[in-house]
Figure 1 (cartoon, rainbow over the protein chains, first blue to last red):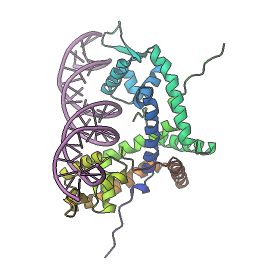
Figure 2: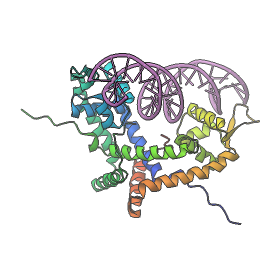
Figure 3: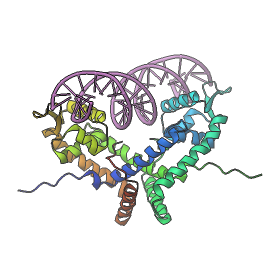
Length: 153
Length: 153
DNA sequence: TATTGTTATACTCTATAACTATA
DNA sequence: TATAGTTATAGAGTATAACAATA
């Protein structure tokens, strides 16, 4: 009679450790940006708009690997918070564009500083060659697995 | 007149790459366990019960770093799916215990196999010394930052 | 007919707090 | 009063699909 092996533990998986650290980093960052009145998803959205300038929701959806519906909902919240503007396109009246307003543009550098601070808090424990190594390993997986889109959660 | 520096990009942060890979791993795993009718959070819950045997919800809440309410809700879903049992404690009638039933116990090894498979898909791209290095770096951050609890999302 | 974007619906995860039963 | 657990509520994120307007 053969003995059965135990099912592998949670800790046996690299994915487990990855999720543990990633959740810690994201939760800590979420608390920081909350002080500026936004969520992590909103930070990603605002940072994207900062680079693109006025852009169609559908393009943002592609860029952020989100559905149009999700973009709409995020845009609604940021409009309510008066951080972005939604404009009609006179050439194609189906099309809209989204863009940062003055307040939104002023907020992005403050949020970026919080992101810098958060990264330093978590990865400051690593030596600079360790940080490079970690980034290299993560980028390798992103490349191999063709991971795409901006992670927001 | 001094030029202002641009706000740091998303990609400039290790947290960004971590979240990108972690989300990819978790999403892929979520799709796998969905075929067995459970979510990632439910897998974590079931795997914990497999080790503990019958256990109080409050103990599980501690162990999984979740609130009692969250545990209750998860337990409700797993009861509906007939994977666990909820029993009253005759000594203290406030107290309950949760335990896997036969079906739940049979499911855990199948889910563990999916976790193995998923880990292999993502980290198989790395050489074994790279995998060890990645785990070591992640564990170092967990230790330094005293990250705790089982990540479920 | 196809496309753009919004809206409706639904589900998971999370947290807080009110509540019930018991001690 | 304190504790164990459940339930209610709410918000964020996600996805699907129905929908209106326009092309």
